[in-house]
Image: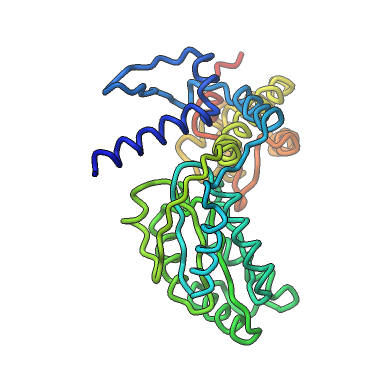
Length: 344
């Protein structure tokens, strides 16, 4: 019996890859080396192998040319009712299986609020690079009390207590709709512990999806039911979100070198000197320290000259001031490249 289930699972996996692997053509076109192991093709794919701009264009074209068709499965309607009933009975629900479950969760949540006006739905996209349960709680509280003055600093205990009191006073229930509860950032111990605390609160429930099979042993949610559902829907938005941060970073670095080319010789020399200082003082450099260093290196002789050049660098966005210290808000790699320049 176990062997038959394994065979069926492999068939579903192969079918899913064949139908909805948006990277397949791109990877083949990029001629990335592959090796065969155990009758399966293991792709040795590194982020550096991808042209992120081209990949983004490719994924966008898929959405435009072939909009994803959500297929829950033959008994899809019964499944939606099943999850809705579990939520209404007070359970937390986690859904796993092949394919993106974003549209599925949104449809379940919409059915709940259509039939039960007492629910507040708060959506968290765990696959986003900056996903955080703590920040989501802050945004939620701010939206529930927009006109109230904040009298105390944020703390988990005070926030959860306020939320509990609010729901009780207004006879409301709160449903956290979390896409990819096992997302890279939400996987942290701090986020998982906070989710665990939330799962114990009456009038608050969690409806979430996960894709990493280990989550069932890592997540410690209270009163939770696990449900399997294969949607076979492509992870278009999730994949795009993963690469968006890298694409923006790549564009920002391209723009940096374009701006540097427009600097005069004096500004370039000052920028290089700042980069060299930042290699040992990553938190930033004070003006006096910077001026002394430039004077010792015979780059400039007067404070006003340094101030005028720094003003130009600040306006260009290359240099920033953080806590009264000058920094170059770019990666260590960029700072190292700037510091290693040999200027005439």
